[in-house]
Length: 171
Image: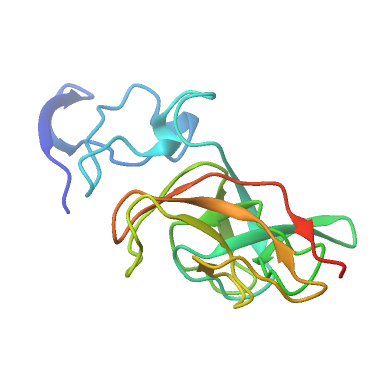
């Protein structure tokens, strides 16, 4: 969506300029703000402490929008990969809103609502799935699997992310 334009003076010349719907940092200081395609102010335009708690991390594999994400130490570098209930140490730390290819930066959100899902039961608790990056309404029950609540369905397509403590099944 194209940002709205406004008339301003640049070096004494009247100019038509687009408002910003995303910030590139200090170089955008003083610019007018436009709402993004969702009708909201982009999180990178908000002051620290306001908006979703998130971190930008390099993805060590392809991530899909809505994937449960595990943060891990790759030889001293924090990286993001799909969380997986089949292995201790791959618990969910957050989720992605956008698809990311391996090696690219992923924004991992630690709270908020995951949208674009399907088939959820309103009000039901969901757990990290044994399918990498996924969720399930049925807690894993196999030995060495991890049981971790990850949220509650707010609708058939939205999950309110609530990271639960992961517990490994030992017998």
